[in-house]
Image (cartoon, protein in one colour):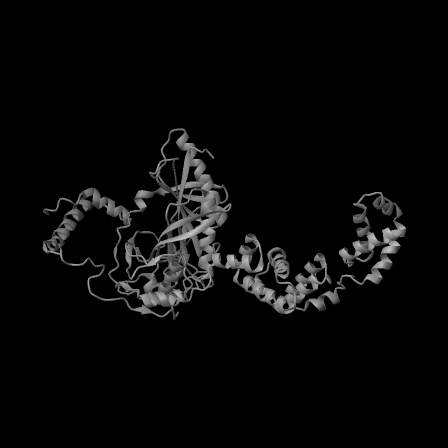
Length: 99
Length: 491
Ligand SMILES: [Zn+2]
């Protein structure tokens, strides 16, 4: 069992609903345990003293490379639709998003 | 409106940036004329293992927009992931900007009924557009949704205002100003009907004299200036009515329906707003140097508000005429070229400007509407147009004739002289032939002449009418009036 008590079952249910995943009560408990362990492992990082370190938005000291605004080839529509569960003419067909 | 309350409005505008390629990949951003799912690659489809690369032009256009509305440009900017699950979002997150947007702290001046007001702009940030969803109902009662990924990844800027607007009218004015700036610096086509300029509005009410913000409602899916205005008016009244009967306003997102002219509740806001932003690990921060900003600044020439002031000053036009003219770049340039050419032809600068503005603002828009044409379909040049202005100012054409000649010029691309000749449209200013026609008309209409002599000034109008009838509208009314009066006095 994890010693991270911050992660409640309700928090797991909330995350599941945000990501549109349905979970049984057993699954919620299992996920709570697993995620608590992950959080415990990551919590090791809290032991590092970062008082003198500037906050950063990125882990490595890189600056972004920008690209020229040139349009190139895209995939064929056939390839785009290849992994789609279903299609209708050139469009991907899914369950209705508005009931 | 119940004047116990004060309305508080803030606007979030999404405008697609005018680039050739998408925000993070080389797919063409011309999705509107492309076949469905033909502008898609592994990056914008959100396949595992791909890496986004930022489009420099998109960053430049957003810096330009920021500068045009008086923002400070952050020297370092970064991207963040905004997480939510919806079928229009290929990756399950949108690359957006959270705490370090490209531009912050701007302002936009609006004027309403002669009163100037400054509306704060909180931030302008970069993000990517989402895929297009089409809802389809089958005849058998089932339904499904269809996805076209072409739009996913098209560069988008979000311009967020401060809650500084106090009425739907102010919000409308802000939108018009912002729209014209974005268009004039060519940051976006800003075509509302095509969805390249979209507006979400936040509106809340509070008791006058209080400073705390009331519970706000967000109105989404509004795709015209008029709909934004109508939706805000509706929502303002709805909220006041609820408050008056002691009910609470629910914080929520409401959609506007053009058909029912109502806002309708869409979903509870708290749920959707849990986006769990975090820094985009695939994109390092972007450094925006002062030199880069200065270079972009130098490409901003004249902003709409400045141009309107210049038109008012140098052409002595009204603010209304000036703002209509400058709302379209092609027309504004055409107008300036014509008036300068009129000056070369020796015409009075200001009166040519007025005649020219009237034809462009009134007649041109009527003709475009009637014939269902675009400005770009028309073929006339400013040289021909300035000759038309000359013919009007020299009384060779009266105003009715001028409109006919103008319309034919636009449609046929011929010179005004040729058109007037072909249609037999030239005003008779030749006094000898008018003297003769008028003397006959006076002898046939002695009762009207008698009326005039007895002091009925209106009798003149009847006689002019007769002259126009006789000359098929070609008589110069000014000269004809002078001749009628002098002939009556002599008789
Ligand atoms: Zn792509």
